[in-house]
Length: 116
Image (tube, helix red, strand yellow):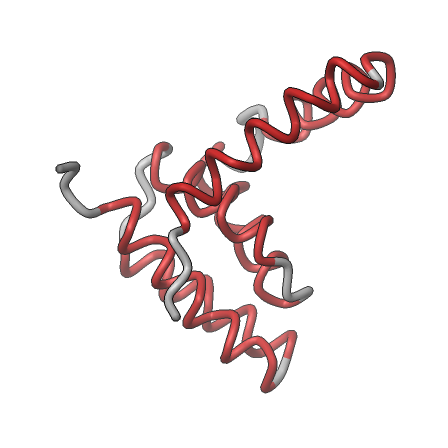
């Protein structure tokens, strides 16, 4: 059965919102870390999101894939860029990253599909 990565990313947003209510201090600190680490610097924001995608695949984190693929797509990552990113993740993560690389590509295709 295919995962619905668009809905999965929205579900993550809902869960994170509950964490902000339940543990606001740590979540504010995490949010600030995320904001600072994602800011453009020597690397642009899209490249940083693609790095997060590669790590998500290599560590085999479904939720991370859903979240960071959505962010990479919103920041202008192309399917070809995602494929190259998956290639690097496979290099670093071996065989299990092949499976999760396929998952990441499916997530990208779902986010890139026309709505409706």
